[in-house]
Length: 79
Image 1: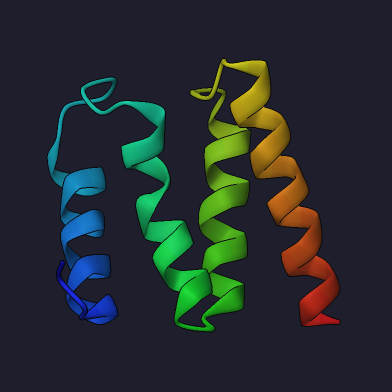
Image 2: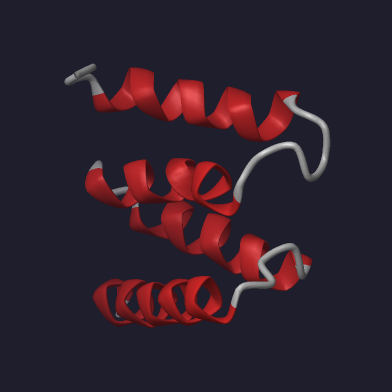
């Protein structure tokens, strides 16, 4: 267990930005957004999730529904 959200978020960002497109499973590409939300960086989490949805890289219907639901929750929290 890392128990250091900023460090974990940095690792997740490195995974997302330093790997070849399609090299990560969808859950790994989402880690940075989940960590941002856990650190109360709601606008960042919203932008990351919106980017994942908009990229078209999420093709599994259940994953897409999960992200859309979380995006809606973040938007409500940011109002």
